[in-house]
Each structure stands twice: as structure tokens, then as C-alpha cells.
Image (cartoon, rainbow, N blue to C red; front, side):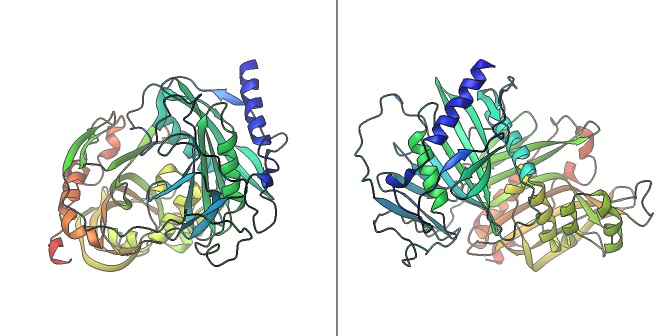
Length: 496
């Protein structure tokens, strides 16, 4: 208990050192740079985690390494007291200020990274727009619940502690966050994750630093949060109040013509598959209650995470009518007012047509998987086919079409397949309150520029997906998972 108290006290000291930072950098449009403090009674405790065992999940994609001697870093030029640079992301339409003595980079996977000592190494901060659009109904507590579970799975036995959800004051706003500690070699790393709900976006901030050496990095975090503008051109247009100059503006690079993909084998304790070389794997196992577990797997291109193939074991509920949905709503979370309705034929095409509602519920639930799916809007159906249908096993079908993705510069080709199983209303609800449970949801999504040369390879990778090692094997018997995803009749290369 004493050790836990001392750790929390050290964190509070780091946060308190961030008070009154106006002497260290630029002013925000509101005046002072702002403060970051822990709210009274909200600090909770830092509980030591058990040893969950090594996870099969690979290390965090692109995670920089710890400097060889963090206690004695190489000398560096001190940043001018009043000097700052502008980081501007046209991809996610935001901009903020950072110390011009630091190095900043952009990646589609992590967003903006600002290194506060050495490039490509801890310590650093990450700034990323997790969601663009109305955030009404988003459940912050669910987001952190699933994020904590994701971090536990990702870091395995290296993760040593996790705090409760903390409420912090940053400038004039209150922001929830969680503190993690984990080990890299002989070092203990602290990772602060904060989520700022602005009402029309979710801005995610992360600070990583060697334990006991977090002051400069936390100052950089405060500077980014208090100077954040949801406008890539805000400072370029002269709306900012500072007078310094910098070279931190980041312009997205033109995407080169995609090359043919080579593949490699991947395996973990739940499944095996073949994937394109360099693509990352994320999976999540969710406890569905009653001893049932569900598997969600995403394999994506880190240079363009919109390009992926996926398997989502179950998505639900899809109501058969608006009246069916209304009968369920008193017993469901409020965000289920956005739940999808499939009133016509239960097909993959019908599922994709209401995907905006599916995505809204995913975001509100805050599961880790929701960060990998996109808000697909079906703009063109190229091919749609029912593979089989029965009253007991449901209707299995696929759709091949074009979709738009918010913030993407081009449309994407999607092949989506699922099995919609009609479920009866439970006791206490009208018999008409039926819904569909969508099983064996799988698909390939590729940008227009990549689809012509990469579709067949990525489809073969999805066909290789073998979840036979998954503990709840019986749950895979619905749909056509054993036969894999269907091959569309359309010649994809002729489309692009």
C-alpha cells in the first residue's frame, strides 16, 4: 500500500509541475497555456496487476525504443523559451503548438508524434483524432473499459499497473484519463492516455516517458491540449496569438502506386492466418456472458489503416422493424436508439446499407474493435448474392461494392459477407419483437488505388483465416466460416 501511495504521489507531483507553464512556451488564443491537475477525490488508486501471462499480440506497432541510457541522455540544444512550431494535420483537420526544439512526425497509424528528447524513442506524446463527427451518446466509461482490456492483452506480463479512470483539469476543461505502467528491458515506462470529447470530435492524447522523468513530456502534452484547434489552417491563417515560427507543419505525402503484396504466416493462441508482409494484426476476445466468448480480428496496412481484412464473430442487434426496436429500447442502453433496422430481405447488402447505424452503436459502446472498423457508406453495388438460406441457420450472402470513408481521399472497394440469423423475442416482449444476429462477419476493404493490384492477395489471406484453436469452437458453426469467404464472380482487375 505504501509503495502504491508513493507512486501516485510522484504522478501528482509531475502533474503539478505542469501548472503555470506560460513561461515555458506559447500562449493559447485564450491567454495562458493552461494547467493540468488531478481533481480532488478522483485519483483513486493504482492497483498492481497480476501476471496474466505473455500475450500473443505483437508489441505496439511502431513503438519507439527506450534510449540506451535514459538517466544520461545525449546533450541537446535547449529550446528557446518563447519558441514554438505549428503541427498541422490536413488529414484529420487539426493543429497545435509544440516546442520548436522537439521533433514531430505524422503517421496514419498513430497520428502526430512529438519526441521530447531523441527522435524515434521514448519520451514522446501522441495526438490523434479518434472520431470526427457528432459525439452525442458516446460512452466514455465504455471506451476506457475496452481500452484497458486492449492494453492488458497487448502488453501482457510487461504491464505492471493501471489506474482507475482519473478526471484531470487541463486549462479550463475536465478530461478523463488512465495511467499505465509497463516495462521495456530494465526500464519502467509510464503511459498517460487522455480522451477529450469536444462535442464534434474525440481527441486522444498519449504521453510516454521513463518513470520519474516525465515533466518535459507532460508539459508538451499540456501545450498540445491547450493550443489544439480543430482546424488545420488555424495558425497558418494568423488566428493564433503567438509570434514564433517553426517547421513543424506536416503535409500528407502522396500515396505511391501500391506494389504487389508478398505474404507471411501469422499465428497466435486463437487462430492462424496468412497476411501481407508488414501488415499489423489486432484481435479482441469479448466475454458475451454465459461462458460464451466472441472473437474479432483485424489485419490492416499500417500505412493506410483503411485497407484491411477482418473477421467479427457476431454483431447484433439488427431489428426486423421500427416497432420491434421500440419494444426493446426500454431495456437497452440509450444509444440503441441508433440501432439498425433491416425490414427487407436479410442480406449482406442490407447490412452494409445500414452500416452508419451499426457504426454509431459500436462507437457508443467504445469497444477496442470500433477503432478499426470505419463508417462505411455504400455508394455502389457491383455484385450481391445469397449463398444459402434456411430458417434455422440463417441467410448467408455477400455484397461487392464501393464505399466512402470519412476523411479518406478516395473511395474503397469492399467485399462483405455475413450470416443473418433470425432470433425470437424473449419472454416479456411482444412476439413481433424479433431481431437478426449477424454471424461470421468478414470482409476485405481496399482503396481504389490499391484494389486492382492487391485484392486477390488480400482475399486469399482472409480465406486462410483458421480460428479452430479458439476456445469457443461451437460458435463458429453458423454461416459458412468453415468454407471461408466466397469469391465474387466479378473480375476485380477489370474494374480499376
